[in-house]
Image (cartoon, rainbow, N blue to C red; front, side):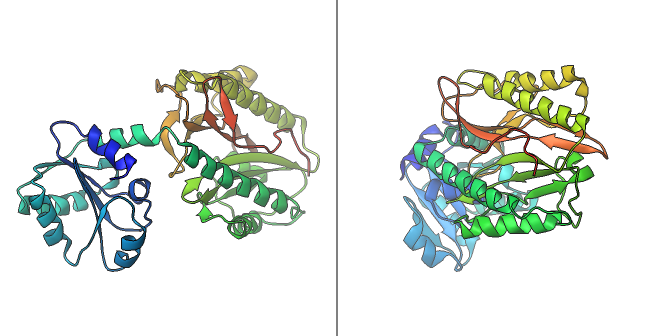
Length: 358
């Protein structure tokens, strides 16, 4: 088994003799093999990757540190492996399984006289492993960030009066993929004018006009790992309140960044941004968390939120993304992705956060 699979098998509690992993990202994390369907069975001595005929050849060549089982009838082949290994109590990846899938798996286990352990302990163990990034993971996220910034820099040159949000979003996605991104990290958020007040608005045929804010919440994936960044720009002259809101968000983000370091609770980081926004007169206009973890998934542990007592540690990757959203008027968000260090953080982003007028 790989070091990751060995760590996982060694972390299985005494009451469990196996674990079944369903999610695409966790299968990839442990085996380095990418597929849209598969099952990774981890015991305390061996690991088995079950795939169907669509992936069997590729899995045999690419999956690392596990035995590939190309199944025709999953219920038969998985039950056989469970019986051969004498497994009796198998943990499930609870966050990645539906009720109907759980019922199907339980029927397979029953054939081998095994039981499913339906709690969140496996998820907790995997999150504990994934939350600390290796130097290799950090390098991939840095590459994803470089792609994102390069694509945005080129796309900004296309902004002119009348261009639509959708035009800009499509141009960004095209440039990211041409620069080496596997995919975009999420449906890119490109909003202009009043729509910037919607934190997760959808790009449409809304046209850019003078006096608008244009908000870009964007990211790329490189070898499975994500980047996440938000910048808000002014198109032409903007009003005094727009400038005030921008300055408030910028300072709130600086406060959050200054609070980031090994040993600090996430709730404290959130408060550093939120308290400043509230005291500036915008209480109630910052509704989401200050940040979140990033890695193979765009949203991972931890949540940098008001009530979180999660303690940041060296090697964790999180975002700092406060915002102010004035309904039906405008909004501003500024976001960086950083890796926690003993003394503070290292910022993946290099693009300016000064108010830029295009």
